[in-house]
Length: 585
Image 1 (cartoon, rainbow, N blue to C red):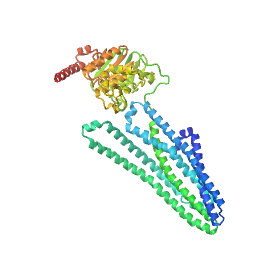
Image 2: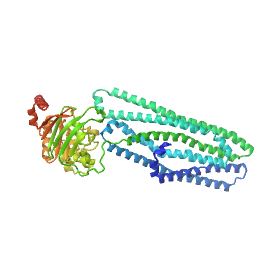
Image 3: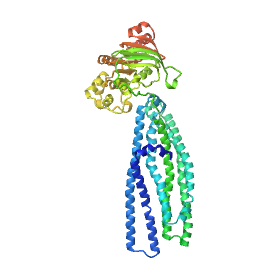
Image 4: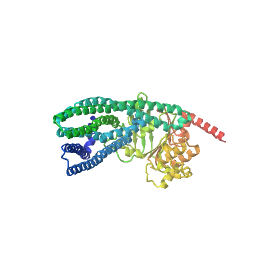
C-alpha cells in the first residue's frame, strides 16, 4: 500500500474526481446487493405459496431499477477514476520529459537511451494502473467485499457468515508474502525490458555498421540472449502472479463447502429459510471477484510501486549545471576571455583534460583551434557551452562570467555545429529553421546559400520539402554537415562554433563556405576547431592543443615560421592534397 502514500500528491490534487468515483463505486456495491436479496424473497414467497403476479411485477421493476442504477454509477466511476489515471500518466510523462530536457551531459552518459525509453513507457503505464485499476480493485476488494459481508450478516445469519469466512485470513498472509516477492521480481523484469530497449535502439542506429561487417547473425544472437533473459525474469513474475488465483479459488471453494454443510443444518433447524440460503450462496459468489481482486490488487500495486521507485530515482537526479537565482537574462555578447587552470571529466578526475588554457577572442574575430585527435578541442568547446561547470578557472563573455548568465541568455547567443551532426526526421526546410519554425523561406535559402547547400537542395526532387529520414539517413555526410551549418546560421549567433564541421566537404566547398562566413559574419565572433588546417588558416589567431595544453599559438604565417607541430602538419596535408590531385588528374 506504500504506493498510495507515494502518490498522495496526485490524489490530493484530484481528490474531487476520486471522491466522486469512489462514491459511485460504493453505490454500485450497495445496489448490486439488491438482486440476491430479491431472488431470496421470491423463492421464499414461492415456497410459502404466496406468490402473486402483482408481486412479481413489483420485484422485476426493482431489479430493473437496480440494473439501471449500476449502469449509471459504473459510468460515473469510470469517467472519474480512469480519467484521473490518464491525467496521472500525462503529468508524469510531462515531468519526465521536462526533466530529460533539463539534464546535463553527465546524466546522458550515465543513462542509456533504451533505459530512459522504458521509464517513459512501461514504467509510466504501470504507475497509471495504480491510479486506475488499482483504485478499482481496492474498492472491489474492500468496499464491495465489505458491503457483501455486511449484507450476509444482516439479511441471512451472522453465525453462518462468520463460519463461512474463517478461511479468509489465510488470504491476507499469502498476499503479503507473495506481494513482496512480486515487487522484486517485477523490478528485475522492468530492468530486463530496459536492456532489450537499449539493444534495439543501438542495433537500429548502427544497422549500417552491422551490415558492413557482416555481423547480422552475431547481433541477432546477442539480441536473443537478452530476450531469453527477459523471458526468465518475466516467468518468475508470472509464476508469482499465478499463485494468487488458485489459492483464492481454494479459499472460496472451502467457503462454499462450509456454507452448504452449516447452512443446510440451519435450514433443517429453521434458523434460516431456503430463500436466505440461496441469497447467501449468491453473496458468496459475489465475493469471488473481490477475492480475486485482492490478488490483482497486490499485482498492480507491486508493479506500480517498483516502477514508481524507478521513475522517482530518475527524477531525483540533479543537473550539475545550475542557474543562479539572480542570473543575467540579457543576451550574451562581446569579447570572449578564457582562463582555464584545469579541468577533468567527472569519471576521470585523476587525468586533466585541459590545463593552462588562456586566450582572448575579440568580438568580430575568428579563432582557430587545431591539434591531433584527443588533444582537447571538443572539450574546450563543451566548457564554452556550459556542458560542464566544474572547472578551475573562469570564462567571460562580454566581461561577464558565463556562469552568471541564465542558460536562455547564453545558449541562444551561441550557434554550434558539432562534429557528430544530427538531423531530425523532418523536411530539410524544417531542419534548417529548427530554432525558428516560422522563419521565412528567403531567410532559410540565404542560410543554405552561405553553407553552400542551396543548389544541392534545389536539385532534389522535392527541394526544401524533402524528408531527410531518421538522423538524415537519406543525405550524404557532406550534405548533413552543410545543413547543420545552415541551421546554426539562421539564428545569426553572436558566437558561431564549428567543431570539425567541414571535414566531409571538399576543399573547394570548404573555401566557399569560409569565404561566405568571413563576409557575412565580419562583426560576429567565430571559433573553428578542425583537423584540416586549411579550415583555420585565415583565422586571426590559431591555438594548437596537445594533451589539453596550448603548445603553439599565433597566425597562420607565425605558426609556419615556428617550424613546430603546425608547420609539420601543414606540410603533410599539402603533400596529401597534391598526391590526391595527381591521382584525380
